[in-house]
Image 1 (cartoon, one colour):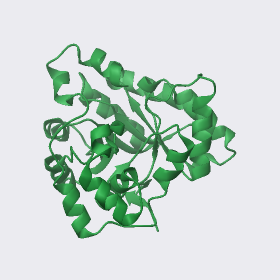
Image 2: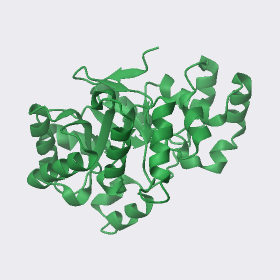
Image 3: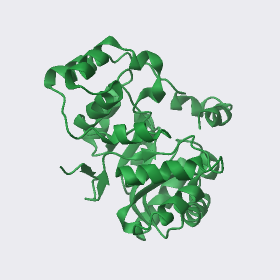
Image 4: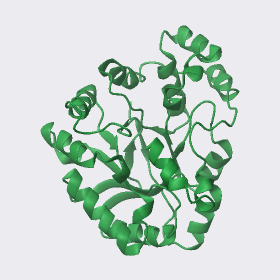
Amino acid sequence: MDMSIEAANGVKIPQLGFGVYNLKQGKNGVFEKTINEAIKAGYRHFDTARIYGNEQALGRGIEDSGLPREDFFLTSKVWTTDLGYWQTQQAFEHSCKKLNTTYLDMYLLHFAGPHYVDAWKALEKLYVEGRIKVIGVANFEIEHLEHLKKHSEITPMINQIETHPEFQQQPLREYMSRHQILHEAWAPLGQGNKALFENTELKDIARGHQKTVGQVILRWHLNRETIVIPKSSNPQRIKENMDVLNFNLSEEDMERIARLDTGKRYSVNPRGYQVNPMFVKLMKLFM
């Protein structure tokens, strides 16, 4: 089964990736062990960001695997303090250096912060030069995408947004589909929210497939043609999250999960960036 999704430019993105948000380097070798376990489990798509502070450790883990760089799909993101035409190009070079690579498979604007249009022009330049295979954004709402469309040559190819069964992002998904913008979910498992994992509907569906609730949620994302980047430092969970290709959800299962949408975010609303000067400081608590 080809578990990849094509971007608007034809580049294939592995649909099931591995997120390293909040996995810190230098703590008893936990980060290195986690990356090693993920690679052994079959993950090749890794998602990081400058603000996570672990690009260098991820690059080291990939190099230590002994596998060719071309086997991996690496994503990083430019943080809001580095938005701007020249600043973003410098941030890209720093990320490449830390990841020990000359190019990135995907590079995203982390938020629609000040100067994000100029930052996007920098991504367009790097894309045309062949330094980035897929350019996109994260945490962009429709108004941000519309504004960018009016001031850019290339439409974002992907938008990485908070998505889980209680926050399904349907209006934004429909907009993105119309404009050939892929949907990538961060916090695809709701950041391990206990109430979500104790949901009776999800537990009932999981029992019917002899799978865990987490596996059902990931399968739901995959069926919606969403790219997912679950995160775990637990070796068993790392393998479990990958073991979602040997079953499928029925239309009834998908409808039952669709009814769980409450519109409830578990994180900060990205619209607040434009009006709340404390947003960056608040976001660092989540990063």
